Image (cartoon, rainbow, N blue to C red):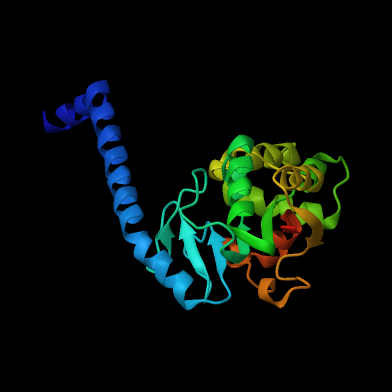
Length: 245
C-alpha cells in the first residue's frame, strides 16, 4: 500500500510542479541573499586592491587577489553574480577580466550583453581573457581518418559520457558538445573575435591555456584540473585575449 501510494504521488503532475516551484524559489532566495551580501565585499575589494581583477564564472576555483564571481557560488571566496545582467560594478574600475569555460553556457545575445558590460567596467587599456571550447576543433572530429590527437579526445569523451556508443563516435562527441553541460552557443575563433569587436574590444591575441604575454594572465586556467585531463583540455580549448582601447 505504501509503495503504491509513493508511486502514485510521483506521477502526480501537481506535486511535481510544486516540487519544481519549491526548488526554484529556494534558488531565487539564495540569489537574493547573495546579491545583498556582495555589496560590501565589492566595495572592500575596490578599496583595498590597486590592481583590480575580475573572474566571471569562478565555480570552485577562486583566484588569489581577484574578485571571484559565479551565478552559483559554491566557495566561500566566490560571490554571486549573474553575468547576463548589468554588472554591479563602477565604470572603468577593473584592469583585468577572465572568463574560463563560461561564455558557452549563455546564448549569443546574452554574451554580447555580458561583453558590453565587461567593456564598460574595464579601464582604458584593460584586458579580457576568454577561454572556451573551440567549435572548429569539434567540427573536425567527424573526419573519416582522425589523427591520434582526435582519437584520444574522442575516446576520452565517449568513455566519460557515452560508453554505449561504438560507431560514428566523432558525430556523437560533436552533438554532446552542443547539448551537454548546459552549453548554449559554441564559438570558433573568428566568431569570438567578431563578438568581442562588436562590443568595442581590439588587439586580439590567441593563446593556449596557461600561456600569455601578460604575467597577470598566465597560469590562471583551472578547467583541466576540474575535468581531470589537462592534455584534452588544451586540445579542446581556445583562449583569446583582447583590450579595451
